[in-house]
Length: 176
Ligand SMILES: [Zn+2]
Ligand SMILES: [Zn+2]
Image 1: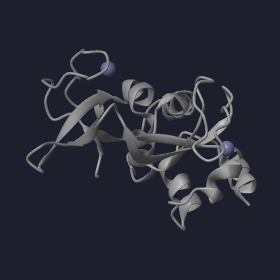
Image 2: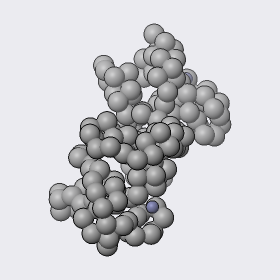
Image 3: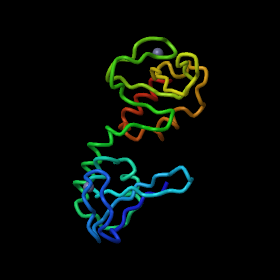
């Protein structure tokens, strides 16, 4: 993926978050979206709107950007506040359980609301047919799951940018 930050070439594009037009020459964020034709297109945002709506890709683009960004401090702060809300999309990942309803596929025990859990993709029986769905694990149970990839922790780190490094360290420690 290559997202972009650039000065708007025209004043015609609308922001995907606030729906207002992005003024010509104003800095804007282009979130690259792959479409069905294996082509890609951009969804445009004001920088502050992107910080609220798509903080993780914006943070990646800012890291590669050598433009002088006005309100950078405020944008970084919005990213920090909002990245926790962005849900990971690639398995396996780790997250804070938002409810107490999930249970661990290894030990069958409940995973408490607010606890860190690992999500992996697996086949689930959806009433007569199999579909892909998320399965959840206590970090301490992960190594006892039969289909666990060797580099699980590496993948979890890469796929869970919404977690703090301290939370990821806590998961890794629990897995040993
Ligand atoms: Zn906007
Ligand atoms: Zn468990």
